[in-house]
Image (cartoon, one colour):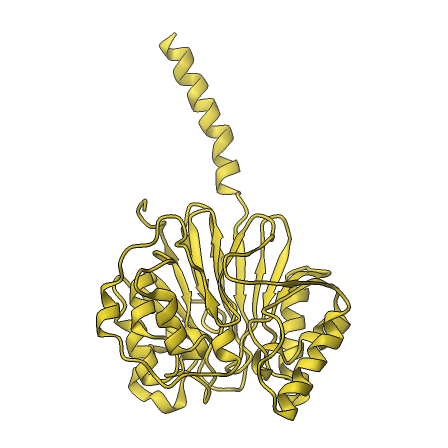
Length: 340
């Protein structure tokens, strides 16, 4: 009886092993849009989500890079396009993308708060593209119903979640030493921020949320909890990336979507690098003005503006993931975090 049971267990293990090893991951691509944002997610079932669209103009440089990434992923449509806020490096190609490939649902925080002629024209251009699909206006606590992946909105329209996510809510001791910056009345402070969870893997993207709003989100208690992958807020500009939030969520890995001369400030990079438990920090670009604050070349996807290499992430449901530098093919594997 013992031999039979043992043999049955061995057969089950042999049958189950390929299935476990072959489980499809969540694929994430951080597209080089020279200091804007364009992040593409493809789920195991083939659904897709693009967060932001890069700069317009420049001979359709960023538009073509985003479209190439979508097509190379084998996609015929985008299920969701999230526009974190209405600045040209984020919303600039939304309508142009929708003219080239179907977008099922556009996600945003509602009307722009900026009133200059340029801001109004940018928003109106987005609205013309948005009519081609459905529209979801989100507020903190809402979700984006992407299949296989939980997308929880933690900030939007200048507000933040009132209740902590499961496993979060501990008092944040960093709040006591917080120093505010000047208030930001514009679109950055209204950015959509989201926790993107795939099984035990958790990623945080706060768009261009600014310093004081990060404090409001993280204090007096941290509502987010530990994060595996952190996309540095606002491209690593000093107006964002407050340690009161970054250090509270304790990212294991950070990726900075900076440009050669956009973002990547030395002060913001120092805050990220000092985060407790950080294992690695990757950059889309070498930051020209930050000198020795930059990471070593194997951790940087683009040393200049002569190419447009991406950083890609492949995440498993157990919380393990890999990060690959498209320029060097440097790949690092991160095991699942210990049970929370």
